[in-house]
Length: 152
Image 1 (cartoon, rainbow, N blue to C red):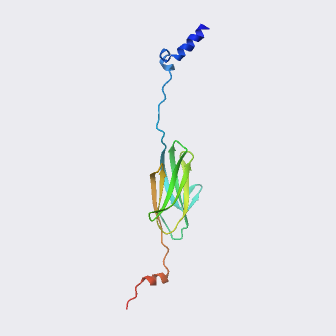
Image 2 (image 1 turned 30 degrees about the vertical axis):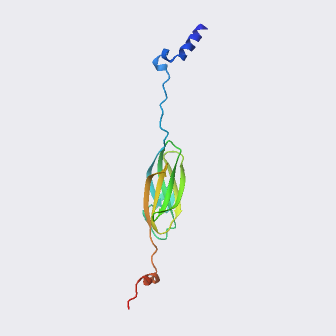
Image 3 (image 1 turned 90 degrees about the vertical axis):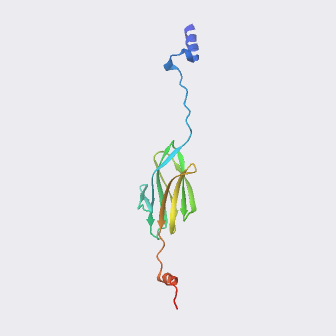
């Protein structure tokens, strides 16, 4: 019985235990999520969760586009946002969950002609941007003649 009490008492005194058996202090780490975009693409469609027909310039008849991103996050889960801009004006923003790492995610938007960009943000910091153009529709002959000034 005395032996058990002596061993229990020794276990409570950290200076008396051999070095390999002493409890090591836990290190404190900064609780910050690190998110990076490994790849970004804009495309009119997705096939098997991948962009199909990716480009940086789209014809006027394009009605809808996807912004697809491959994201790494440590630790996961995390969250990013896609912010869609037309000619410098924010038109749409959506939060996208990142369930694990790496992770593919996307947003889509009905588009009109002009200069577009999508900013990918994490913790309110822009981590990646992609810019692209949707062309203006061709002018009809009536529109073309209306722009030519008449001479007298």
